[in-house]
Image (cartoon, rainbow, N blue to C red; front, side):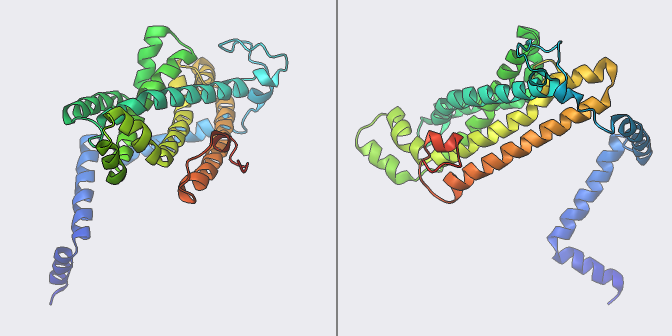
Length: 299
């Protein structure tokens, strides 16, 4: 048997190889259509070299110096508490927290109304279309819309991430509610309870651990995207990054803000991981609020 025949037989017997080959060919065709060339990567490397030289070492004065131009104005007496890093990161956490809580409160009734095991089919499909429409636009586009409507500042960020959180959480929540065991729901229906009571007293408590996990995930997502929406004027640490980028191009201060944000995100990830391990992986118990916000306590 020739080498060519052997290669053909291997290709025909292993579907993964065929899939990989087809995807490779499609990738080359798409890159060609987009006019992506390796020469542009060379230009990018030279630009990266220039930016790196200007950004290193990072200027951590953004953590110590007062930002007199902060918006909203900082009224603390201590300078570092009014620094761009502290004010910007605090705003990002506050925006993410409010958007997550509002998104959770608004999306849970919509999720219950769109779960096929809790709501009539026509209503469920209608609400699902609404949630899908909210997810179509990313949080950055929502931020642009609300900056136009309400002006620059944290309010636009809260509204933007709330809209996206409702759409995203709603989908995760109705999938979790549809995964609830059918037996408790059937018992509730035989008792003559209306649909909203079946959802409130049976389905939602059964899915409590999943709902908590989704809320934590959404908070982490909103913290990360707080920097993105800030670039268009919707508050948070991204607004301060944009201030240093245009027109000053102070890359060393932008890098310092990125490092601060990275450290905060790592801390949030670790706290979220402890909460998940406590309530979702190890024990099927319903969490207490004290243990949610203080996961190192015993109750």
